[in-house]
Length: 260
Image (cartoon, rainbow, N blue to C red):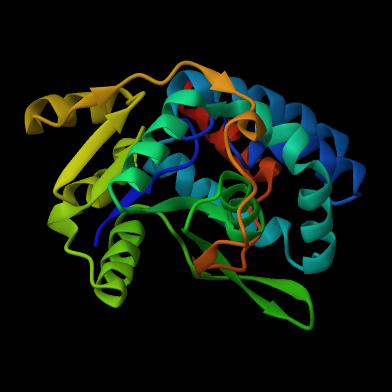
């Protein structure tokens, strides 16, 4: 009775899951063209540098203002229509191989992401994982209020996996966790088998100091060639949140300011 916890972006898939949906949200009328162009640049910066605590805070605050009033159903529909086209080619073969190894050992697979359930849930279903933990926002009358109920980030991820482990009867000392980002250090430190994957500079240093293994994932494949269709949707532990690709507009602006 144990689990393997996987961060999503740059750990299971080769890009940011939220940034990938910039154009579909533009076509759906949720964001403007200027934001889409900025998100393309932000994707490039993210791939090179990752996201630190300051940039994640900016993303969170921008999200609250951006999605206020959006229709939950419209977001669901856009993600459902474009998921396989956008995300399917980005899944790391190495991550899928680890999924197979953990399943063979009897462990549940849990994706833990600061993106929202509207994105993380369908990706988890596509990959056949057992559960997802994601950011959730407040919904009233089918629309987002702009308030965040739970932010799956930093220590929030640690608390969420501890609560889930207690509920499922898992000993975290027997569990595994994988991430590329130093911001996930609390989650990694909470398990008995932490692993850095494509680590950013700060996490690479921490992994070396802590004697944690590091892996390099570099082979994106089409997941539908490797993953059988699951019998049902994954169980969402922390769901109901929209996180859009254009949230990183604030991040890009923050990066530019910090470089001046």
